[in-house]
Every structure is written in C-alpha cells, then in structure tokens.
Length: 454
Ligand code: NAD
Image (cartoon, rainbow, N blue to C red; front, top):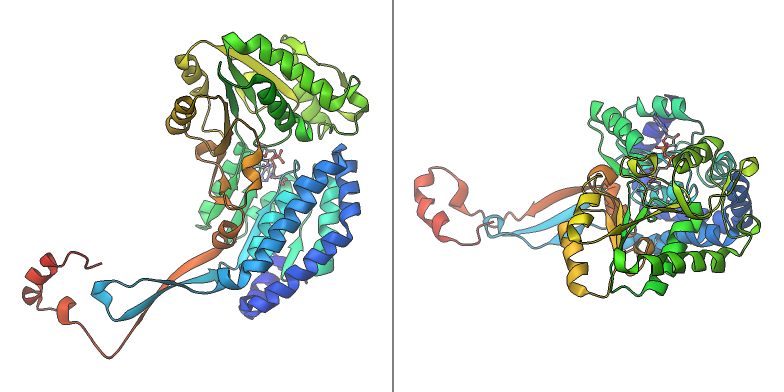
C-alpha cells in the first residue's frame, strides 16, 4: 500500500523522533481545531443531529483538553525515565526509553466520530509515530472534516486519513502495521485482532458491552433517575459507556420509573422530537434494528418514532425477557429496559448472562454493597451514584476487559500506549562484581545469603 510505504520511509528519516517536531505539529492541530470548531459541530449535526452542546463537551473540547495536556507534558513523558538499580548490576543507572512503534493504524466508530478519531491520533503523534486514521463511513460529513483538518496540518507521509467502509478497513487491516488502535463493536474487534495476529501487531481494542446499572433500595432515587437519564439519552443512547439496562430493587421500582419519566420530560420537554437537545439514531439500519427490539415489549414510556430522520423517542421497557432481542446484545440506542430484582442472586443471574461489560453503575447509599459489586464483578470501569463520568478524568484509564476490550488510554497512558518501553541499563566500567562469572562454586553461598540481589 503506497501510503504505508511513504509513511515508513518518512519514519525511517527519524524526523518524528524529534519531540519539538511533534510539538509544532500538535500546536498547529490545536489552532486548526479551534478555527474549525463551528464547522465540526455543523458536520456532526448533519450526520445525526447531535446537539451542539454535546459536540462541544464530548468532541471538540474533549480533544482540545487532551491536546493541551499532551503539549504541557510531552517533554517529560518523552524523556527517558530513571529507575533505581539492583544490587547485582551495581554500579549502573537504569532507564526506560520511550520509543515510537512506527506506523500506526487507527480505526474509529461513528458515535463520537471526532473524539474517537482524534484522541488516539494525538497520542500516537505525540509518541512519535506516523498515523493513518480510518474514520467511520456511517458519519460521512464528520469523516470529511476530519480529513480536511488532518490534511491542513500534516503532510500525508506523517498523518493521513483514508476514508471508506468495510472493504477499505479490511484492505488496511491486511497490511503490516506496527500498532493498531481500534474502537468499535466486539464483533469487528475480533476481526481486527485476527488480522493483527498474522503480523504479531500489538493492538488496543476499545469495544462495547451490555452495561448494567444497579439501583438498590437505599439509593437516592430522584438523583439516581436524573443521572441515569442524562447518561442514557445523551447522544440518543449511542454511547459505549451508557446504561444498557437497569436492575432495580423491587421495593423502589415504581418510584424509580416515575422519576425516570419525570426527568426525561424535564430534560427534553413534552414534544421530544422538537427538542434541540436530542440526537437521532445514526442510520436507517440502526433505527430499524432498534424498532425491531421493541416488538412485543411492554413500553412504560415513549416508543414513538419518525422514519424520516430516524427519530426514536427515549423509551422505557418493562421487564423484557432475558432471551428477547432487547436483552441479547448491546442496545446502543434510546431504549432503557428496567428489570426488578429481589436479592443479590438475581443480580448475579442477570450479570452472568453477558461478557464483561465496558461499564457498570451502582446507585446505593450502602458502602458494603458498593464494595461488593466492585469486587465481585469484572468490568471496564464505572461509577457509584452516577453514570458515564468516569471518562472525564484523564488520570483514570479508559478501556474494557474481556469482551469489552484490551488496553486502556487517556492522558499519559495514551502516550505510553503508543510507545515501546525500551529498558536500558548503563553499566559503569570502574567496577565489575565477580559474582556472576564461572566457576560458580565460589558465588553459590553468597548468592543464597544476599536478600535483594535483583
Ligand atoms: P463497528 O465495529 O461497526 O465499526 C467500527 C469501525 O470498524 C468503522 O470504522 C467501520 O468502518 C469498521 N468496520 C466495520 N465492519 C468491519 C469489518 N467487517 N472489517 C473491518 N472493519 C470494519 O462499530 P460502530 O457501529 O461504528 O460503533 C459502535 C460500537 O462501538 C458499539 O459496540 C460501541 O459500544 C463501540 N464503542 C466502543 C467505544 C469504547 O471506547 N470502548 C467507544 C465508542 C463505541
């Protein structure tokens, strides 16, 4: 593939090893994003009517904050890191060097189409790699603005965008990359992992899952409902860490349902279709899939839709069956199933139906219960008495486990992710301990006696 060869050639010239070269490029990117902020919001709005505020908070400002943090810390992150030495090697100085992998491929999804293309790309560039970004074909207006911004800032042999769908993605995956960063569904994640394995290419897989939200009988119900509604219907439920379904203690179920309904109306008004704050589902296929999930279900709220622009109202479904379409896989839309539980065995029965989710949320005022859920169940990350917010702290790793992904990023972790950690021990020549050299019989007893040899 020509672009990959050109990027390899560019990388071999060692230009990206120069941290000041990376900084200049990232500063140019910062300016370009600020200058095009309005166009970016417009493009994402054209793709699926994402409210401008959500674009500002979760796309452009999110990316600009990642850029600011990176520019502020890049000198330190890129410097060799000194580690204390060991007795056996004394005298030495011990280091970790940060080495770029080389040619990085980033494949992005459509739901946060700007953030999920740029956040990993910034880190890959900061760490000194060349990058090919493949945005999602499902959000074509955003894909083309991503392409315009990148071509205005970078030469293609450094960073470029390849637009296209599944076939283009598969062509890219057939190449030998030095690192692949993929965000998308678990199904496609498996395809990516298989392609990467052929070349032993390291990967990060940021995937999805069926995220439970557990509300116990001690929870502050009104606040819980407010925070669940916000996190669920943001981006019309098309958020990888949104609540997928609610498990609520039977004693507080009715109260929670009433509070959920109240908060949906409070956020989006009586006529939600007219609300400027509610996105559309992204495509006809996705929309039809969601409507299909509602067939035969008992709807407690919502359920209205408009085929013309893939509008599906925030919808609460009562007690769907475990083998229903709704409960089989990730919903990824504005449908919120609510299921009552009686005891902790019920919770176990539901959670054990699925792979490890990307997120789990617990609403409870009992510390012991919160602790129990965190310790007992494996999931990517989550929150107590809130939803979605774990993504906003760049000091916390963001990623899945098991079927929800491999690896985690954000902040310094993103820089480290795109850097091979090269261990180097610099040995002094003025002393050479005889301990390790044969004949060993002289050292045998001494080695046994020294407690901290390594
Ligand atoms: P997707 O897996 O369908 O597509 C993601 C990317 O892969 C796109 O660029 C697409 O062109 C490409 N692709 C699709 N099919 C392919 C194939 N057969 N071979 C090679 N490439 C292929 O995902 P999506 O629908 O864009 O996004 C939704 C999914 O992403 C949800 O499951 C969601 O949970 C997950 N997601 C995860 C995170 C995270 O950070 N963990 C973030 C956002 C979305």
